Length: 426
Image (cartoon, rainbow, N blue to C red; front, side):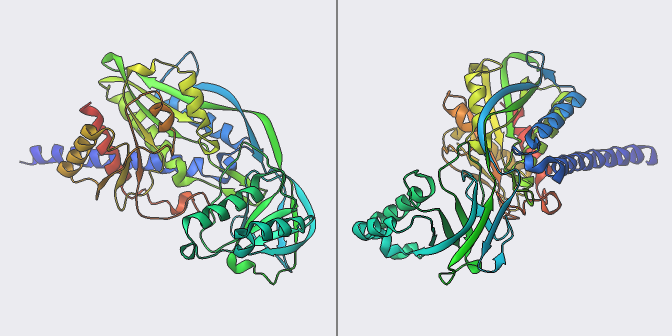
């Protein structure tokens, strides 16, 4: 009896250890990619390039094959950056970048002390009043305060949004810049363009219409031919005629000045952790089909890395049997959402069935097509795919709080198992 039980116990312990090691590996990837030394994997301090080199080194350790003798697929893009000073003083208080204010990512350099002129909704909705108002704004910052959108009809809301877009992006805006009071979560983004005038979003408790001046000091730099790269490798499968493709973007928003880092642990260091864990698995467990792993740059700038890839593919896109995009994989308390689930209903139904039979995730929610991540570029080429992201848990997103130490990876192991089971049946 003991001779039977001891080996079984040993196998059980070994299995548990292997699973723990996979999760530990995932945590180490997230910790590395979201660390301050990578500067938010953006376009200052070569953060994106350091991330790409780290991923390529992991590909090498795992033993992935290279396409065309390199893991890198290089391309260039323009990008607006804030490599040094980003300061905003409202009244007598200097605000904290990232926590209390954001600068619009396409903003130019600006410095000085400026008077503030409140811009009210009724000023916007009357064309004649707005035209007269606008002529008085030269050399001033406009302050637009949050308002209850439920009080206005669709036509009025479109007019308000059009005016705000004019103030943010149009070169004919005569004002010195715009301040937008925001009572919601501060969410940043990236820009491959630089606009004529700066815009700041300020937490509503930090500013009101009693403010009569602001002091700003911003140094931005538009890099017109920034060199970046996708990272790609593959494992040979039993069937050489078809491919399964896993993708995830590794870039994030970088830094807003020298003080505000946007770590991007969930978005999307967690997706890269899933990508690399699957690469390790399939290197040891030979897949049914050739299996490619692609880490994209430039997603936050407008899906630029995946766009470059589909226009310059490293393999025949028509051979892709199925593609899965991992973008936000770090929670799962409420399950996963599957973009293109209703487009590829048969595959979605099988994913749900596996999840129910294996009792893995709380739910697998269906969603239609949405051009909101790198899978979209493959959609345009007719490649069957899912974009999957986890639900629930922490709400940090595109902010300074999306950190490795607070990312739970709640259902990471079960999510991994679901994907492996799903791909096995393709």
